[in-house]
Length: 163
Ligand SMILES: [Zn+2]
Image (cartoon, rainbow, N blue to C red; front, top):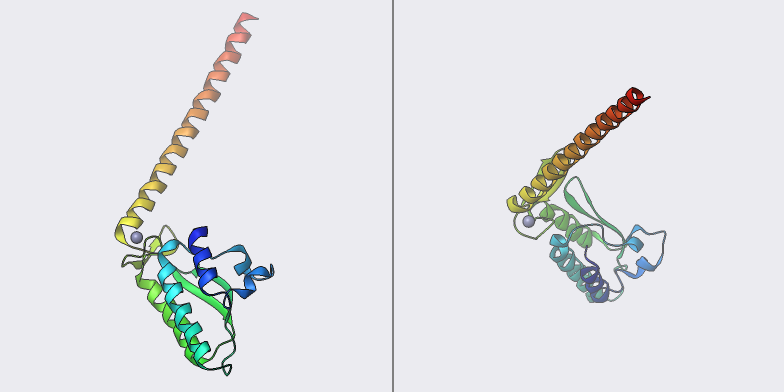
């Protein structure tokens, strides 16, 4: 996630992100999902913190340990909370399966060359074209190297003839 968006979440939910200064927590290294899921995380943490605050200490503070993508959907790994909060976290994971991780538009989980990811059609198309372009350029590079090899072989033969 873009640093600017991650910083916004850290500022809005300092209690939930209090564990990010501990380098044994994966969250110390950032929020490992793309920007399209910002609103899911923001609304989930808003509802969670509001629930904790309304219970006057009877619900333990939720602390984020790791935020990542797995099999195309969001995972919010946290300590603390109660069953109500577990329900919010589960719902955030479920709704991430229909929201594009890149741009936040409606999307679906698709299998792109062996990788599961949640994308809208335009974002998926961009990535597929980019990968094909990369493959094409890689092939061109290999062909160029093959030609170089042939050239040096010819140079070597010329050298032999001269000698
Ligand atoms: Zn998209």
